[in-house]
Length: 121
Image (cartoon, rainbow, N blue to C red; front, side, top):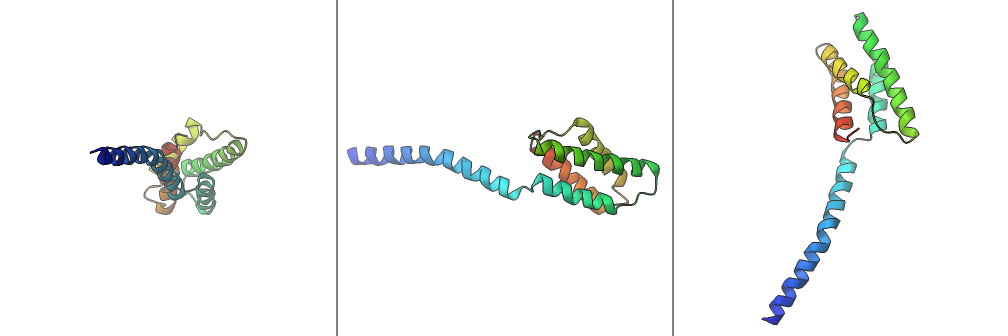
């Protein structure tokens, strides 16, 4: 009887120790799986540079997004990794505007918005 209690208490203690370790491992794996925000924004910037909009609204959105991306990268290098709400709203507007005409751009815009939102930025 005493042996089974000792075994249970050891396994309970061991289980208690591994739970926080498992949480840390899960967080590390999530970070590895999630794209690097600066790299994603650089890829988005490259796609914006290659995109030609046929209308003035689209051209304005692209110019403003380019400016927002540069500003976000500058701010994040200084330690401020929060995206301005105007940047997030412009991402949403651009997704709506370019959904039919520029699918690759729309995919990158959606990924950027999702990653920034998921990261709590």
